[in-house]
Image (tube, rainbow, N blue to C red; front, side, top):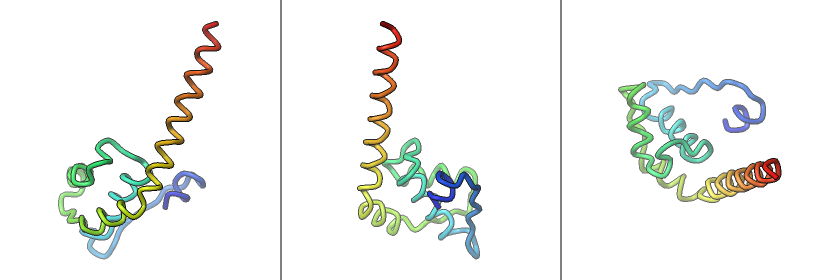
Length: 98
């Protein structure tokens, strides 16, 4: 899903039979692991955010927490890349000011 959205710039429609458990679970995982959306460190808050738009959402929080824990390296890599990009921008801005 991340490759389709970020690498191929495609839209992704996610749904399951009832769209109550599997689809919301996948979306929450995507937001927490790859997007690092606001409150990404607290999947329960991300689930609450999803429920604002999809009230019948009932994600599998146990699975979400397990997958995030097992794939923490993805978050760490994205955080490191963002910090490196931020550092590069600051360096360029400092050089422009001189």
